[in-house]
Image: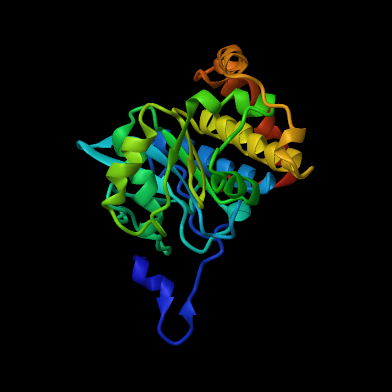
Length: 275
């Protein structure tokens, strides 16, 4: 089936149930199938933590090159995070063009930010971008993320900022996203949301966990009203805590420490991602 089969002129969009699409295990490489399962699990974990925005944000994974061409996996438009499956994920190229038979379609604009990061960073195996109330609330603050909590100090020195340019529809914005990101692995998109990257889904997810909790605790702390009532640690302490906690984000360290447990939790609470 091609992408046009998802659209019916008389009834509008028809989004297939992701648990009913043909299983792709054995029809794709073992590496791709493993990455599909990890990415589908990441979508469900984000939903489990309340980081979804219906169907309007994205998580992407880079696949091994095929004949010198880069390919990526991303969510089919219209499938909720908590129902994502490995077989429902859509393979696309760097321009967001679908590279497989699928009953689904994708939102090319949703890949604008992700393609920028994947193109610029070899270590961007997985890119997570979400719209959460706490993340957006901090993104609008002129001073950004503050050194109020251990959560924030563990990520602040690896955090970049990108000014708002409207809904990410224009490919020209990719150059500015790349410039603003630099060598950082986390980003606050002003007035928009949060972004993290990692060599693996586990590392990207762990970074998002700390960033989202840093934003949430900042908003909770600020609910007392006056900034004078809050204690912010000095820059030297922020640097110390960042260095102390940096091992958590080394591939094979923090992700291996928490990922197996997250998979067990997902199997208990919302199994089926590996269809």
